[in-house]
Image 1 (cartoon, rainbow, N blue to C red):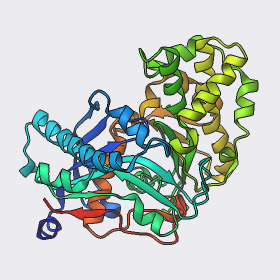
Image 2 (image 1 turned 135 degrees about the vertical axis):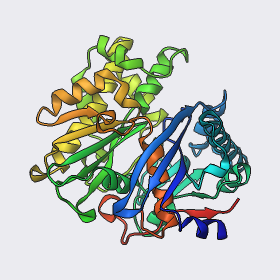
Image 3 (image 1 turned 60 degrees about the vertical axis):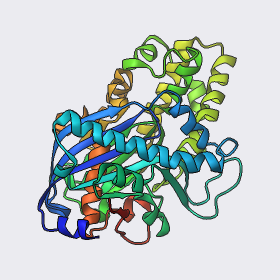
Image 4 (image 1 turned 90 degrees about the vertical axis):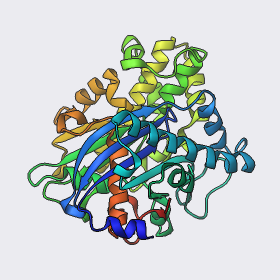
Length: 399
């Protein structure tokens, strides 16, 4: 642990944040200069890149996510292999930035979630009695192959305390974006969409956050299916823009109990993955919708679930003044346009407008969380996750 103890004396550190989300499209790697900690935290993004997974790896990861195909031997092997790929991503961004491992104080790795079971989740196979979550990407491999002290596996401490284990980005959101005069929303649209609301002049206890439902996950699955794998997402939202959403179908889908569940709440592929997306596509086919109409309808589902969450659960006194959008969804112009139309009293802007990269935000967040863990600071917010207490997050691994 001497490696970590030495770092406590440094007020300014270079930290690598590593992240792969539910879209399973690659590993986000960010080199972040982190100054201070807790409420004095300041960040400067030095470098960022997304490293696509090698051919066939996304399919192997997605197979692990399903109880019918997630073999224990495959999970065991992939835990170490994904750790190797995360280490390679860290080394590649160092090389491209002209830096070495000696320049980096710390790595914070989220890993790759393959299963997430908040309390009482009904997966269709069983109802989870114990809240649990599983991220792979072995941090011992990352630390060994990079030679850099690594902190990883952040979600489990929050879940041990009765929380949802997510969204953990709410704490970094507060550190970077809380404002004394306006209420700020941070919407990340990845495979799943999640929203943090920071009330004007609020404290940690006033932060509200939750997953709102599917983000790009269902759209991507349907695009992949209808194009027979030649396309994997709706680039810039062009297909959705050329289609017409079918509102009666959306109204049926909006009856899903998750959309009416009060926060804190989280979800993932267990609820809105490939099976759900194919059920939605089948319903579109039954109504004889064109391909682009199908995509437009699923895109509108994402937008309406976000807007409905805000209507249901964000109180009038915390009406969001500015909503910053990040994640892959920020590049979908149909999503951005429809959010602006439905949230007409809120300024909907890409996160880039705040000075923080929309694409790098979550990798930056895990660099911050690693720094907070190093300093012994709790990294969860019970108002966001539902945990009984604040917890120091993550596990330390020496090189």
